[in-house]
Each structure stands twice: as C-alpha cells, then as structure tokens.
Amino acid sequence: MTSRDPHTLLDEARAGSRVALARLLTYVESGGERHRAVVAEAYRVPAPYVVGITGPPGAGKSTLTDRVITTALAEGSFGGQHSFSQIAILAIDPTSPFTGGAILGDRVRMQDHALDERVFIRSMATRGHLGGLSLAVPDAVRVLGAAGFTLVLVETVGVGQMEVEIASAADTTVVVSIPGAGDAMQANKAGLLEIADLFVINKADRPDIQSVRRDLEQMLDFGGERGWRPTITDTVATDGRGVDELWRQIVMHRTYLEDTGELHARRAHRAGVELERVLAATLAARVGSLAAGATWDEQVAALIAGATDPYSAVDQLLA
Image 1 (spheres, helix red, strand yellow):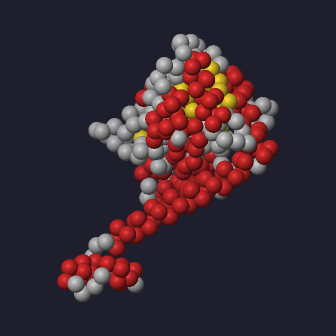
Image 2 (cartoon, one colour):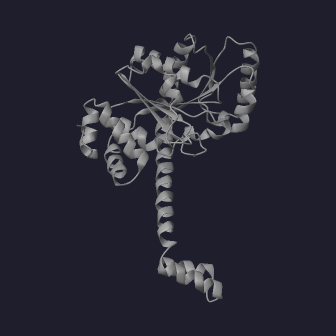
Image 3 (cartoon, one colour):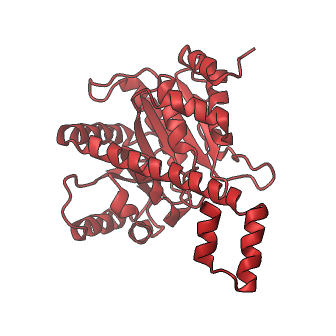
C-alpha cells in the first residue's frame, strides 16, 4: 500500500510510482499541511520546462496536445539538448457542478497516450477560477518536476478571454486559433496576442486560413517591437500535419529564451507572482480569523455606537 507521508510519496514518485504522484497532486489540490510539506520538498528541485497551450473552445487544443506529445517523445530532446524520456500533462478542465472535480474532457481526448508509461496525464479542475488555470497549477508543476519530469505541458480550459494567466505559468505559450471563427480578433481582444510566443492555426484544411494568417500578421505588425516575434504555424491535428514544425518552433523559442537570458527573467517574474499569490492567500486567511470572536464583536458594537471608526477598530484588531 502506498504511504500517505508526503516525503515517502515523493521518493516513490521519483522511483516511478504513478499512484504516489497522483496522491501528491491530490494533496496539492486539497491544501493544508500535507500540501505545504510536499511543496517544501518540490521547490528544492529545478523547475521543469513548461509549455502552455491555450485558445478558444473548439480549437482542437487537446488533439493538438496529443500530437505534440507523440512528436516530442519521438525527438526525445530540445534539438539535441535537454533530453527527456517522459512527459507530464496538466489538463485544466471545467469543474463538475456535482462533484467539484474536473470533468476530465481533455483526458478523454488524449486516448493515444492514456496507457503510455512515458506519459502522465492529470486533469485539474478550475474550481470556478476565471483565469483559465487552476490555482494549484504552479505548485503541481513543481511537484511534477520533483518527481523527475523535465517537460510539462499545460492545456487550459477553453474560456476565451480569461486565459491570459497561462503566460505566468509557462515558459513557452502556444495560442491556438482556427479559421472561420473570428479568432484573430478575439485573440487581440482577450490579450492573448500579448502573451503568445507561438501561434497555431489548427484545422488548417478549412477555408479562410489565409484570412486568419493575414489578420494575425497584421496584429503582430501593429503590436510593437519584441525581441521574439511570434511565429504562425498551420496544423491539422487530426492527422498530425504541421505538428513537427510546431515542435521545431517550440525548440527554437526555448533556445532563444536561454541564449538571451529571457528564460531566467521570466522565471524570476514567475517566482514573484507565486510569492505574491501565497502572501495574499495567507493574509486572507488571517483576515478570516480576525473577523470573528469577542474582539471583533466589541469593535463592531463600538463602530455602531459611534465610539470608534473603522481604522481605529482595525488597529485594535491587529494589536
């Protein structure tokens, strides 16, 4: 029977136990002391490289992700560097209104690798969070890194304008669009244009692909100077067309980030975001504990009676 101790579980996960890894991720999603113990260990290990895949509903993100997994495993490295033999996928699914868990739609669409021992797929629920990402994702990524994964793909739930948060969790962000859905304009409105490192026009066998490409190119032209100009790759994920080229672009982007020092800069920014997130959560919990009890009731009564003001009352609560 797999141990429930976080430290032992992490050792078992490093040794290849998928059951132990799944339990660790459950701890991360559940919060509490076990979560903190797991994260404390995970952050001692270098972070894996994270590729985020986002875009509007129906763009074929899950099928594309499945094809990228196949290509990446066949290559086994980033252009001959940073070799890997396994890949982890975090599929951010909508939350079930009945169970509160992930609906698992993305995992259903990744059947080609469901039984592949080199691939670990975990669905995580957004739990009502509107950023397209589960709040547990950053910690889950670090746990996967601690378990030995050096490449993690994160696919976000298709909620359109709310998915820009992927840029704060990924090293390379891939934005998927499709012809005939006005996605180019939608990308601009949603802010996806600003966070995209690579654009993919999926379902490229449909009409109007040139129109989508033209719109994206024009938006990039008006978007100002950037050290890296996002590339646009045409794919047909259902039969794998263009996926090899997409992987080549992912490799090129990583090389660019490393050569320019941008990868370090992005990760430094991400560390700051993570620290701010944890600080905000900790302070919110403290506020919750202060907003109850005898002292709270006394200050509320004094405020109603005109014997104090809100600022003085807060000073008393914090004293």
